Image (cartoon, rainbow over all chains, first blue to last red; front, side, top):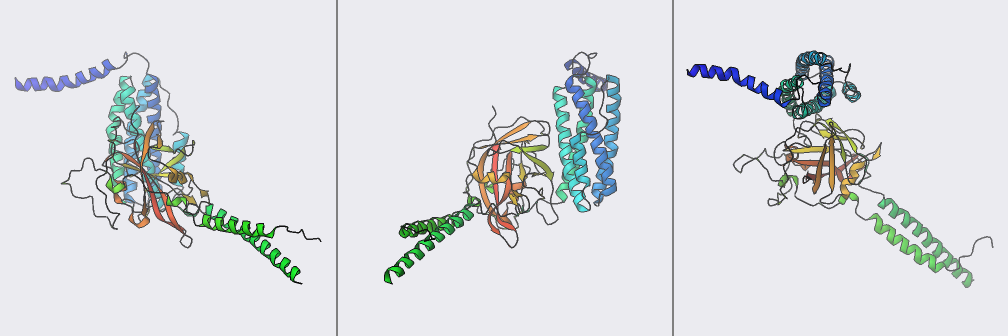
Length: 224
Length: 233
């Protein structure tokens, strides 16, 4: 008796949960909303970006942990993107062929580094891009309507969060910053007032000298 | 006859003396780098979430400035529990133009990596994110550069308590802060609490100030401006 009720609950609960998603969503047959389309396109571009970053790590990383994380990102974002692409096809959502211009710039900026500087730039860029991917997923969960797109966002969230946690842990192993060396020009220590002061003093000095010389000369003429 | 005749040389002498005097006074005036501190320092920030029994975060390698009694900060409003996207720019009151931000890490010697140009700032990506519900999000940049000249963080010296600072994230969301404190620390004594990911949500803007050493090409101090989330609405 008890067993069967638990069984009923096990089977029934997910159905109720799924039902809730469907009920909350717009009519299931409706076309995906702008939010759904925007998210699917952005999520696809994020996947492409993380896969490209993972591949760059395979080629350029000097830190083995970066290489391993990159390998994991390639695998998991390829998986996520497979589901996303299939859903987009089914829903008639057209997906961009490559990462956004900004993402391509970021990837290029990371790859301009070499040695340990590459590892550092890679971790920083990946922290930022996973943070934005997580934010976009949450926005979709709050504002999206298509049940398939919502399920995809739901399934992606823990994966992206896990990647972010791994990246934070790795960044932590590099240690907290202990100093900030933030200026090489010297302009802040001298905002121009000093130069102005010396200028004014110089002009004053010249006037003082001219006046004195004239006075002395005049005296000399009078005396003669 | 060819020389112009100075009619009143005394005027020249007196005016010259006045100019020399006032000029010398100007050369001795304090620079912007001497902008006064205000508000509670980083170390004094109330540690929400860490009880009195919690052990201290780890002894700082250098003795920090003396910790003043717990500061009475206006209770920061709880921001909506929304995941912020990565920050892309920050807007300071002095300039309507947003200053671009890039994620940065830590250099081998422990220094925070900074973009080469003072016109681009670095967000410490291993720490809190502007808009996070907890922790100190750190944004830093060169005050100036021998190559590129001065940058927008010069504006930190002119900030007053309550001035607005806005961080915009990649999703276009604006995270509004108001300035609560400015503190100058000797560079060797930057408080480690600055990089905490727990505690009250705040934004730290960090740059350099104090005396400039021509020989080493660097400044003696770090100037840290703290800002707390702006009241909603």
